[in-house]
Length: 385
Image (cartoon, rainbow, N blue to C red):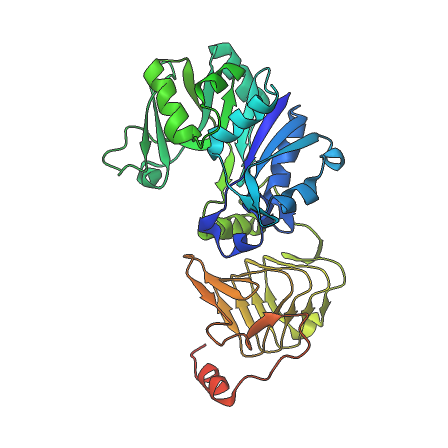
């Protein structure tokens, strides 16, 4: 069976992470989110997978290659062009990417599944496809039912008594919402649906293809299913995904490493004198990370591999990416640290270098770390803890 993973977007709402990491490669405790999707597809017999790529395409292609080590076959459709010897991504939209593949050579010749490459899901795809075929649908949207008060954060799908889709509402107010079933970005298509996508132009599934199917009165259905679904659309969503894995609410993702103490997981060769570190789970600490005496770590917190947490540093409810060095004057609460950036859980970003705070948080591989200026140390020491 065949499937498509949409992986060409720039992920602008997850910056600064997506400056250097394409959205499908964002790690959930050291494992790219797209890898979970590939595993799910394989479990349900979808072993021929097409992936459209654009922004930082080489990162995705280099990691997954031909899919052999994941037990599937993977091929890539690059969307963009070359300028001055450099690849420039230019995505064709979710539907345009599908059409480009089919125009190159007909690939989709039977029922196929389309997944967004930036969502963490646990869905019975086999049951969904069987329902789609039983309905005789040309297209099916997999929906999830959310509390009425949450509908304004999502695209709402309106169906009739036979589950046929009759309308869409994009982030309606609670009062205006005609349904509390939302679009999860998981679709089941018949090849015929591609005939309604124009060639050689940017075209979107949700905002262009689907309204056309509704207008035509096509056999277009919505299936509400109960499954785990976390859309990594924004930094706060990513934050919640990592927290959910650590606290056990996301059940289809296991915490890697070794459980050294209850709720405290570590990778290989973590250097720490556990009797002299204050640590409260759930916490994951990646391999080859050093935790100095006197450091405090409070969960749910993820600290990536090859980090260095200095004595006196406090890390509380944080996500720290690999190769981060947190100085002894650092107190981080509800923060995400990625390279030279520090992000709070609302998505507000501080460029540490531009803010002259790179003496507090820097790359652990840097050997010429300058001591913090005396006046800045004074400011930090006077900050309430």
